[in-house]
Length: 197
Image (cartoon, rainbow, N blue to C red; front, side, top):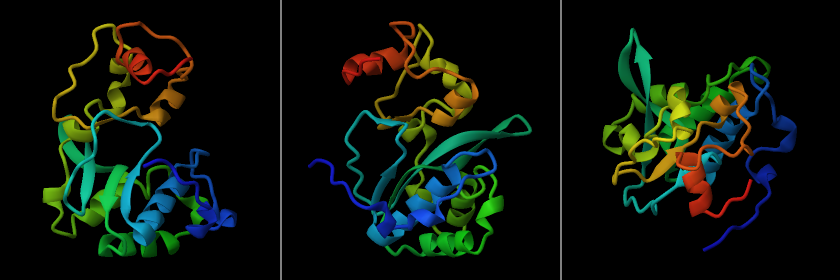
């Protein structure tokens, strides 16, 4: 095991990089992950995902989900922060065809991320491969204050990863290099993985 550095231009040429409506690289990152998975297959995890258990899922497909609210009722939506897929998957082909038909200069933030993935997976028999939020995203994007609470949330034995929701930290202007309450989840993981500020 280990890490192999590869040239990302082999997936999407550098001259095609673009920023979304928020001025972030999120939309390009969404396009890149779909293209990488389509060409190579395997796992994709965002860089703000902490893996706390080995991802030993045997199925060819694996999708994370998150909670979102419609009229104050919790719904589940597939998230693109963590995906396992074989190469040449039909849903990825459709996603890529759609993205490549768009004017990239006007893509909205999240337009081709979780919303598009969720919509596309509804066309397929994918429900057995979409895991509940506690599996990969036990703390939701609107609950990031729970990462810093001196009374950390319980993490289920069924949890494999924790998504830190980097974009929400950025929007709330939270300094990632700050030292937080020693008992909080963030500081606990810093100690566990020997990360210095």
